[in-house]
Length: 249
Image: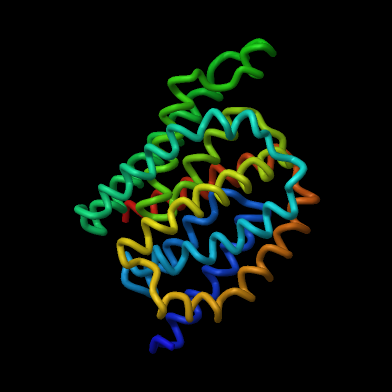
């Protein structure tokens, strides 16, 4: 077992709880977990350790919300997200941790500004609302989502903003997000192993933290059952903003 301080284990355990909670109730909050892991472990090592726990949380979320996903939305995202993952892997092989964090922060802050700007525009027709983002805009979100999730497990806020733009209900949002990240995180595993981010030491840490992920997911499932749509959307935006500022600083 890797030797870590009590403070480091506390940060990791809190991060694992946040992983479970974000998967079950608050998409976008997972970047807070990424920040906690980066404080307790070397930046790149934290990425591989966190990825395995994210997949565990994905399994719970897929089981809990399996009947609520909008697979038409997911099919449109597949090509661009895969392209973003490949770009992210290439970028991570050459960029420093500091550069990665700041690039993602700038992307997130730009997307938040875009989302708020869209909401300040005059009300659109029902047909326009139903149509959601244009194809080019959706493609851009897909590339950014794949890129940010590969380089820092920070794709949650990006895709949360896209799913908000699609006007998905709370349950459809959670179901679509669950299937999306389960598939994307599995795709990331070979890249992470190849880059040396997933190791025997990281898997031992995962084994210790797994119960905290499950506890967070169970608590999040109960929270989601009582979540109002307006409150849900505000929480997603707030968590995204906090995550972006944390990465920037």
